[in-house]
Length: 615
Ligand code: NOJ
Image 1 (cartoon, rainbow, N blue to C red):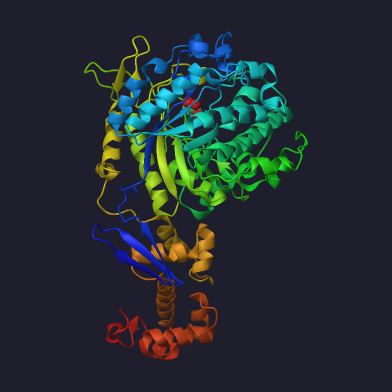
Image 2: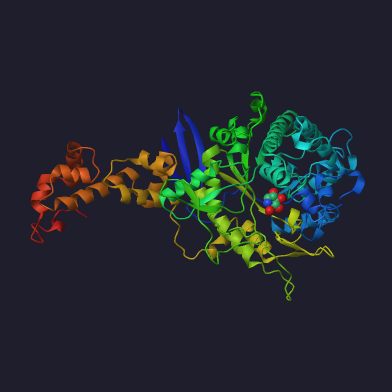
């Protein structure tokens, strides 16, 4: 039995009473902007992008420390030697986080700060630095979310072959053990590796990121496989050694697509593109996430990559596949697609004047609806948005403020999309904005500003941008302040409800039921029925039946239409069933109805309104 009750504050509670066990699940009230009470509001950074102190207190060099020294690799020859000087200013930065109301802060550890050579000797000063940062966060009621690897591989390990070396997963597990033994008395949230697509695709294939290699595709797949093994080993090591029960995720790049329109075939095209592996590049989701979550490379990927693919022992997948507590999505944009006449997804070029970031990425907020939705459909894990943000070239205005209206609009639009996805059944636990501070944007140097807080790199002065104040309000009102950005008070109808109605309109003459529509919309029939009832007031099956009857009634008013034909055209499976349903609903048989209500020479024989059931 499932019953729904309204609580005093207007929230719905679902009571599942089953075999005398009573489970109470709070579900969100129909408010389009409110987030769950325990929603995780955070911001993200990474070590090389903000810390600076590149050789302080025994830190070893990372591949990025060396890469930035090469000519013509980084915009204007810039580097992260000082960056935001966060290493020395972390207390000040944590104070800003607290003021902003952040509940969580995601940062990465510099592997070479802790193990200067990558393995072996431990640098106590490095551990002490992160100890102090973690303690400072906790004292300010901000939960630390630790990413173990955000691209800055120790240079010594690169000299030993880096990710191409089959020992790299063991190096990573040694490092994980050091870190977990030290911090897991206070840290519960762990993210293993960040965006393998990037550090392999850009670092090993294109050479635009450290270590700047242009390897064969097969070698890249080998390096990627070792990174996957490292992820798996790391999860094992965390679970074996953590002092507090850990919650573990990983954060691959969000290679997601969105439909160019709300047509069901364009939605199918976006879903297909999001799970596709097209050619010899690493920019996709499933090559990386299938092994980590499902325990094998995807069949279609194995075919597409066949020629380049090295051989891997089958037992590797027992290591790579580890239970995860959530899927961390880094989503900044999604390419719009439509379904071609040949039934394949094709990219839609951005229109003239379309809103784009400094990277020329689309700013369309739909990516934070469809991305989490498709990923949730693929892997059925709770989702945390660990990165979402936009790059602009903000500056401090003459009035002393930073008016980054682009970022504010971006953030608000994306949060509303995310909230809509939650309304439509996607289990989203948190949102981390990228980034807390302006920072070193890899090969683009300091050209791009991603921060909620502006950093003056000459004097390290921090200035809150307008978007930071906006996020502060969103967090303190738990989403309520987003209302001021909605253009009407009317509650947006959930996507599944809208699309179910559209499906019914388009297919009324076909035989279908609630299950058919649910399959079409890729959601569970119970979820669809519940949502529909909640918003429309009648059950979905009643709604379909009524529409069919109404359509049949209209047909029957034409004296030339046979009963069987009306049944058929209104989507009833057979005439007997049609007559039964008709009689039950209308109090007369279809032929009696036709007799009484048929239209003769433009005039009804009897006034339709005389039948009380015809309302
Ligand atoms: C994702 C990466 O994790 C982060 O390091 C980078 O700065 C952002 N993308 C923006 O490009």
